[in-house]
Each structure stands twice: as C-alpha cells, then as structure tokens.
Image (cartoon, rainbow, N blue to C red; front, side):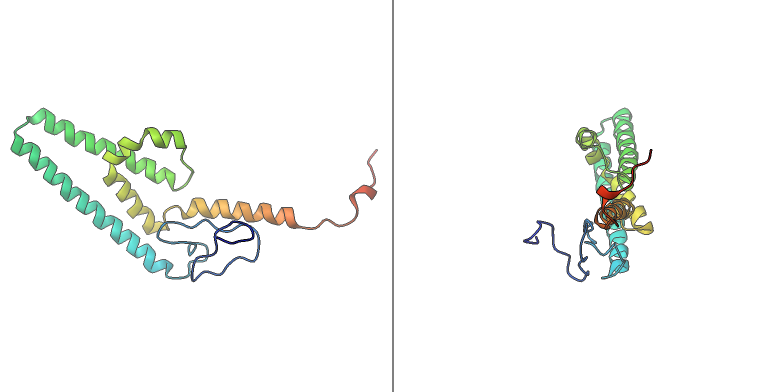
Length: 171
C-alpha cells in the first residue's frame, strides 16, 4: 500500500499511473490487463488451459460419484435425479459466472446462490475457460469502470478559465 493515499501500489512489471484512479487487479493477471503487457497473453493461455483441466478433472470426479450410485444400486430415479441436478446447477452456475464478468453481481443474490454455485462448479469452470479465450475474465467490466473513473478524474481536475464570480448573469 502506498503511504500517502492508502491505495495499493502498482504490481511488479506494470508502470504506476502518475495520478488519479488506479486499475483494480484481476486474479491471475494483476493490472497487466490495462495495457496487455507483462506476460498477459501467456497468462491468458495458462488460465484457459488451467480452467479446462480443472473442469475435466471435476467431470472425472463426478464420474466416480455416478459409478458409486450405480454400485450402490440406488435405482434409476435417484441416479437420474442426481444427473439432472448437476446438469441444471452447472448450467445456472455457467450463466451466473458469465454474467458476473460483465456486471457486478448483487452481494445478497450471490450469498443466496452460494450452494447452487458450489454444486455447479463445472459450469463456473467452463465459463472461466470460455471467457479467457476472449479476454481476461472480468476485463471488460474492470476496463469500463476504470475508463469511467479516469474520465471523472479528468473532469474533476481540469482547471476552469476565468473567475466564476465575475461571470455575467443571463437576464
């Protein structure tokens, strides 16, 4: 943290802005998403590969759970119910995660969906994979917020010309 204003210092390898708002770091990317330097492309490839491998491993674990249901001979209805539950939760988790990359999620809704998102973790991993093929996950949201903050900062810091008290009044 910077001593004078309490904002985090720039990440290693990224130039610190001279003044004004600082970009919010993204997981696995830091602030390299601002100007796509500091190994941005290899990080994106690594994140895409990592999330795909994690999703494949998760499906492998779910396969063991399915085989456990088969061995337990719990019946076709229970097996179908579990498969449908994981499929629906994964689809909902995919959509929720995908939407979270373009707009800030509501904290109350996020808390209420925590269990569903935990069950549908494969969908979240796949959303992370597909988004990392396009951009760093969350980059679009952070970029729009950062550009808006920079624009507001520029408007606040521009100097006005003339003395406002000597301004002629319209009649």
